[in-house]
Length: 479
Image 1 (tube, one colour):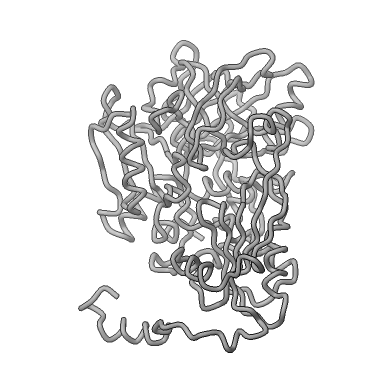
Image 2 (cartoon, one colour; image 1 turned 180 degrees about the vertical axis):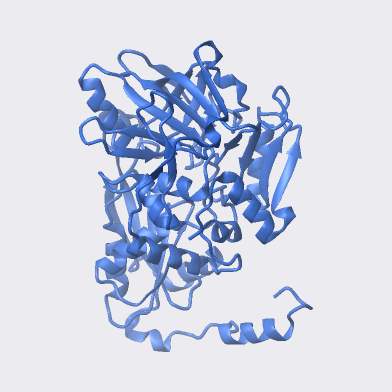
């Protein structure tokens, strides 16, 4: 695993490994719709990472970086793998690493680039940064889409890091939307119960390993700093700004420090915001951060990962590291054998598992195990099991199996499971009643085991023949 110093080191590695064209530099894009629209269009075609500069109304060097892990090659570089690593091997490498990871605590330092600029008092103004309006109907400009929100438990000192959307609400006000079952919310409620505001730090711009660790959530009591250190094989350098209670990455681009009072004391209308489901599903009174201090590097970079339609390989989701690897681990722990691959589509709305059947019931066992994984806010809605000859990273292959190996009267089951508050299919009545449940579909798209050896053969060149063709025509045809 790579131990990138910071976001800039990662960007340099992208261009050094994949070529200068891997990061497209765009001057003059407006932060209202231009940046978000261009990011979306380029993500749809799995184009290069994007560095926006010379944004109208802002000094040169105040930049926005998007699509940072929007291809398998960029994801591989982020994880320290060869850029041509096959997609399923990237998931397998992440799964194996996550299983044997040894947490490495952060390393405290006294200074770092994030202290190059320190804004306090009347100088505090979030509007100095070109936070974009990512979607046409967004209710504000969101500086935090791939951010790290850091809180410290007042009882244990546990430092928790999560990713929550953060909207600029004024020069010294930032809104955060935290679902009720998230660790940071539980920590904040401890402070609120004692009549205190919760100290908070929001980091905007960090290396991809820190971003990934913040998004996947470590177990309660383990800091995501320790998780990131284990993934990197090296402790994250952190510092405590003068008088600060929360350790922040010394090499971050921007750090926003403040306190979060109870919603009853102060709140702000948050949203709407285009979510990863592809819909606007939430808007309401939410928590605010009273900003006390802003730290930032010279020429700061906002790291952006705006949610898009789940069919788009958005900036940090070209390879579904977390959903696929965690499900794979859970399947193995549940005794499912001969797993050949796990993949997720539309973020995690469709989970696909490939197995080699060795007995009747193997497919059903895999389906029930996959659907039975405990989720915290997920929306896995469709579970499909296919045979080992299906490439789970190719949706057309998966659909071919579903269309030709499924008998709808025998191969499909519907169950009930929890969902999340951003589920667009929740009726207003069910949402109001707090009934966050949905149906899930289990689809057995394998050849029937009793006669799978007599299933009609596929008219497709096998993998060995394909490799031979690629070898023979290398340099002549892009096969």
